[in-house]
Length: 144
Image (cartoon, rainbow, N blue to C red; front, top):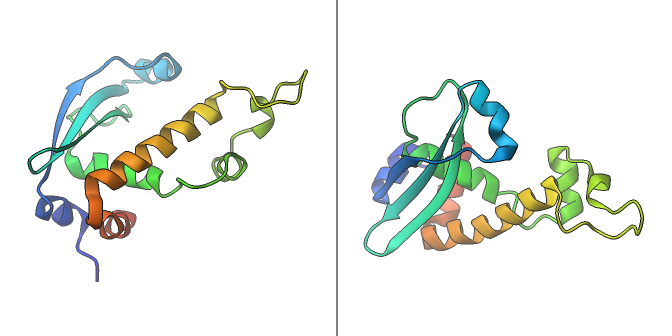
């Protein structure tokens, strides 16, 4: 039986410090509905920290806590390791919009490729941040 996620986060000594951040242009529409952007630093004991952007919809006004941020990161990290094509299919992106219509070559910049790249990069950071506790946290976060 896995420990409830908020309890696990406390047991691991993970805390969060959140400060407001500018909302990226691609999420600007969320601002119209009250969305907020944060820069959140998770800390775990001496020397372990992880800073990430975190976005909330209009119904959340308080700064996000460690459990919410970490569960979101773990949810994203669970898709790391997929090929780009698998990622597009899994999350409903149009793979064709990331390929040049003229040359048939992959475009370096497209929304899906950017998201996929960020998730791959952050997954490595989350794994390093949690170390040996990564798998237990991943399992516990699935039930959160």
